[in-house]
Length: 248
Image (cartoon, rainbow, N blue to C red; front, side):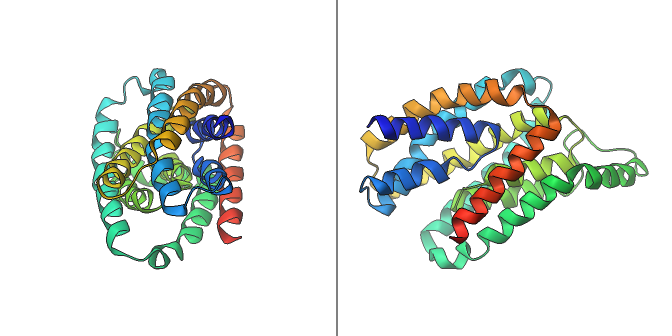
């Protein structure tokens, strides 16, 4: 029980800064003999409070983003619902094949983000500048990330940070705050679907929830102190680790 809670702390911390905390908690549950489906369901439900904790921890960076968060939050909600429904009707192999490709693309976009963002900004400037909510393709891209997050979830934060970093003119720290809200919306949708259609091990979910709430606050403290280049490097590193783990 202690180790599961500690895994929740680690996952909550990583989710707040980057994402991919599931890659810690899910294998931990499997190692202790929790059946895979039950582990997936209980882990998703348990990490929702940690996502909320991360949002609260980054509330200072959310100041002035109400309109942007509401607009992009609608995209995440729509995508999350679609992804959760796909989870119910499609075999995992139908979607899992593209997951490593999406994560690799997200890592590449995070690394090349500043250069691409300058090109996007220059193009947008000729058309009147980048809107507060981002260029036109940000909304559908966030919705697509929501579909991915509702279905699978791991490294969703890497994809969101790539989208926001390129298509929205703002700082990395404020993008992290926005990413936390969008990921919370998607995770909450998936959790509701899981609770409705599957059996949740509430003891496991409670332990992960307890740990992830603490981890959310730790992640906000640590993430806020990272300079943009280092934060970008951390995101890329976590994405590469997630990619290797999935391929393995």
